[in-house]
Image (cartoon, rainbow, N blue to C red; front, side, top):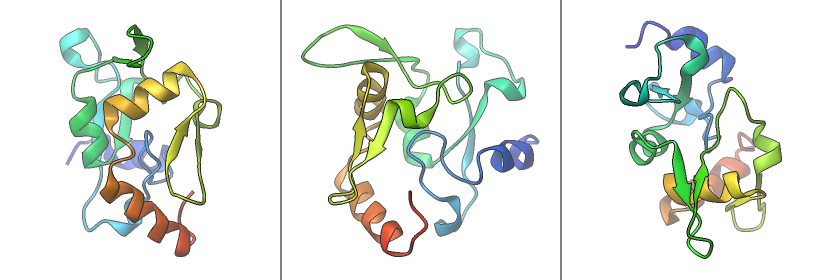
Length: 133
């Protein structure tokens, strides 16, 4: 396990810092990911680490930008240390989808595939259990 896990997870309140999935519902610890990847000159400093569910971490990979198809331009992804989640995203309580409020939010949702069917189904259950949002 990453030696920074405890501090990063506590700071994130044990939720994925991208999609806000609650870690408590999974049977394993979430991953510590580099917001700016080491391959892009990111560091191992705690200020560059985020708690990430497996899905968000896999799709984010080494990306720091995403594309909004209709606009076809590179947009910076959500940065958990610099950006406020509520300024870029909201959750549709009716259908469980995460909605992008900004270009950054929209590009992040697309890049990280936050609204895959399995995630939406899970979010609806988490809402019933009152552990999301």
